[in-house]
Length: 459
Picture: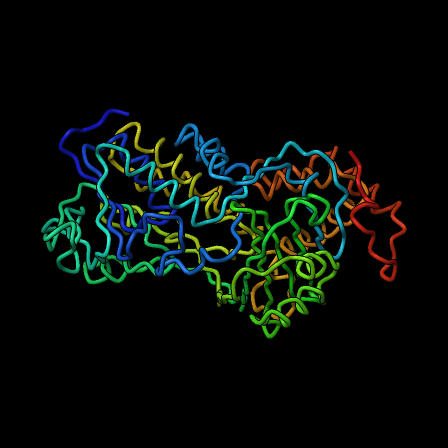
């Protein structure tokens, strides 16, 4: 990508999405400025404006590969900083629809760095780029366009920051990575640009998270536990090994199934899940902090029409689509969007918003459909349950049942939720036949005891 010396790109938001976008823009613009309303800490801690970072985050295998492509050496650096890594099937305990997956080497490697560590490391890498500047403690307040209101020409700021005294900054291109609560459309509407059509699913999800000291003997050396919610028990949990010898354990419940924050209530909620693994871990691990809460009332997808946006404005990341975070798609989708943006900028900057929104649509379609279909299994969640969604959920239930005894089925599903393969890969003759055969021969009745992890391990 050829850099235009005097060109200037501005990114709104210094979260994961904004940092990845800034990395790509640095290749094609003479200057890149990242504007962030929050302070940017010098150590890997949760920022005030990113409370979701306190909870368990998963960087999928495809997301890690994408970040590695943007920042060569990214994985090795996080490993040096203490982030654990391991095979996503042989070193994890997965329980979906009440079925414990068989363990096996999948070749899908997960990098278990905390969200604050990933963001801090990415920020340091972007700071090192010679043409990128950060302005923190400074909120964007409006988009400036040419007199005809056809193209962006700058960004209005909320006043003086310790890094700038300007009330406006010029911009040839603005990437809005300010997230789900983006004010971008509020700024554009008075300029004559309508708000995009929104899809919204009210999920009423509540998180509670605590950290514990990790010992090598915990859960026989495995690196994580994931227990999914079901329509009959709409609660689940996730434990992930993290840097600094810790566990992060996040419990989640839909509707009235809100996990408590206190130690005893937190442990009791974990013990109530489909399998005792999380409860057993909590009972033997030393707590190192108090619980914190995060609520997700709904998921939102905005269908931006590029013809109804000014030239040079690009919505990005959660500004376009805010997923149910329990499925761990957000960081990885943002990384894939960054690679897409790089490709869309290669020819020229004309119609780049159009190219970007069209090119990202398949990735967003797959991730959005998977998460929404899964949420709509909960009978109390209001939403349209199409025949296609019902059929997909019925088939996924059979996949989880088959994965109890056939690890290749589990691997196939793990590759899909890791964004390595598309959902259609689960309908290939090889996988379909395995799913049907495993369900036909399975004699696991509804009252049969759940096998322990040592009873189901097929390497």
